[in-house]
Each structure stands twice: as structure tokens, then as C-alpha cells.
Length: 392
Image (cartoon, helix red, strand yellow):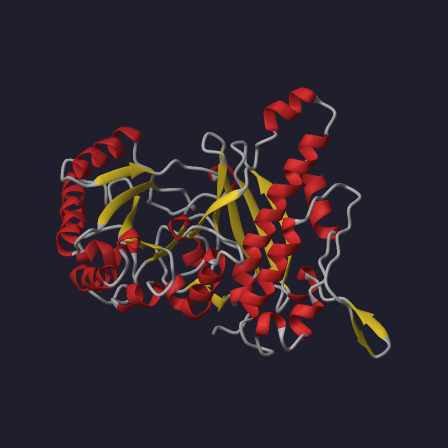
């Protein structure tokens, strides 16, 4: 069904000329609130969208220019679906080409069949300047930041792919195929900013994107279903991203300062300084958004020792001690290979032992299930090949 989906997506252009041309869409002046106005309109379109192989859905008004009819579509004004790759476990990687300059970003749909929904991992930048040594995106460097629309368009395409897949499989004649795969890509109900880029380096676009995603009049996601993950370039990153109505996650990777700088070479502040930034940000949030996640990419012989586990457990507990009503959850991510000369994935026995030590400190600790690693779609493996853009 992959070819059918790609064909349906690429030919099903949506006319959004009224969004870009109308000076009073939803009461907004031209050039203001574009993300909110555009995606309100798009949600209405998607709500009534049912795709088949012959459906060519177009909506909105057409603008007369120079005697010709100009149609503004998602594909010719924001981004197009360049490639789609599906792993054996159903994890689906989307490669989107930005109309502005042809640069490409990756988004990943992760289906959870037992839970009946999919998680979408979105990108906030093309590349990243933080240079984490275990991450493929860090090797790219930062090419440029995405706009709010370029962030939200990833959600649009993911929703559309899920709908098209469901429609295609449910219209096939093979009953067994339908029963086996009808829910291969459940609808997206959870979004994580854990793709390419550092959200704190593009907060001006990320915060309004999240606001649009959780607005009940637009995408309508619950605030608890959107998570922004940051490496925390500085202590203020948490407060800046905390303006968004979403959960915060911190890519910690190591509590020891020297080890943390080895893993995240751009680190300029001590872990205690960064922690205080998080504590202050959480303290100013509503109780339901005081739950935060600390992420650690576990690398064999680097940051998976008993000492590292105990430091992490105590560090996590100290955050909860300082922020009333807060809850810290540790997420362990076994290293996903990116051809690093010395980094290796620890054994599952080692990972489970590390988890137990953190748990013994009174902190909830989970091991993230590796998804999409066969097709370089797993955490830390996202990277694109094109490298041309003015850095900004």
C-alpha cells in the first residue's frame, strides 16, 4: 500500500489560497496569526476528507491573477511529501521537502496498535547545532530553523497518511488483509518534539505551533499529549519553552558535568544551573504540566555505570523535592547506532539493571521501546543529506 499512499498524497492537493490572500481570515489581519488561521481551515478540510485512489480533493477559493487561475496548495506553498519508508514494525518515516528552499526534514509516525493510537515525532529545525555525539542530526549541523507552518505541516501529512492507509486497507478485497492490517497506522493522538533540531533554538516557531496543536478549535490535542524535548542550551530554555501548553522533557544523558559535556559538547552550564532553570519553570506551571521527563541515551561503557544510575536517581528526586506537586519520570533510550566508531548499545541486562537502580531511588523509570531502527527512524538516527541553506 505504500505506493498507493504516496500517489494519493501527491495528487490530493488542497487549495489554501484564501488563507494566504484573505486579509480577514478568522478576524486576523494579513500576515498575523497565519499558523492559527491556516490550520483552522486545514482541520476543517481534513475533518471532511475521505481519500480513495481516484479522489482529488480541493477546497477553498481560487484567486484570479493576471487572467489566470492560481491555486495555492499545501504542496506548492509549504511542503510536499518527498519519500515514505515503513519499517517491519509499522514505524513510518516521512521525508518532507520544504517549498521555500528544497531542504528536507524527517517526521516519524510510531503506531501503538495495543493502545489504538500513533505517536508522531516532529522536527523543529533542519539539522541541529547542539552536536550531541550520539545523534545523527547533530552531525549535520544547523542548516536553518523551520517556520511554524513547516512544523505543523508535518502533523497535517501524518494525519493524512494515517487516513489514506486506513482507507486503502479497508477497501481492499482481501478480508484477511483487512483484519490483519486495518489498524496498521492508528490516528495520531500524541506528538513529541524529538525529531531533528533543538526546540529551544527555535522557540519563536515551536511555541505558536504547539498552541495551535492544542487549541480545541484547531487540532484539539490534549496538552498532556504534546511533549517538547530540549537539551537545555541554557537554564532559560525551560522557561521559554514552558510558555507552550505542553509537557516538558529534558535530554539529560548524564548528571556528571564532565561526562555531560563529552556527550553534549555545546554544554555551557553545570547540571545544577540547568536544573534550577527547570525547577523555576515547573514551579510556575499548572499542576497538570508539572510532570516532566528526563531522557538518557544509554551507551555501553560510557554512561551506563551503577554510579551514573545512582546520580540520575538522586538528581531526579531532588527536582521533585524542590517543586511541589511535580513528577519526574526517567526514560532510558538504549543507544541507536549511527556508525560511531566506539559507541555501542548496552545489553538489555545492563539496561534493566540501570533501570532498577534508578527505581530504587524512588523515581519512575522506563525503557523506551526501540522502533524503526531498521530504517534509521529511531531516536538519534534522523538526518537528511541536503546541506544548503543560510543558517538563521
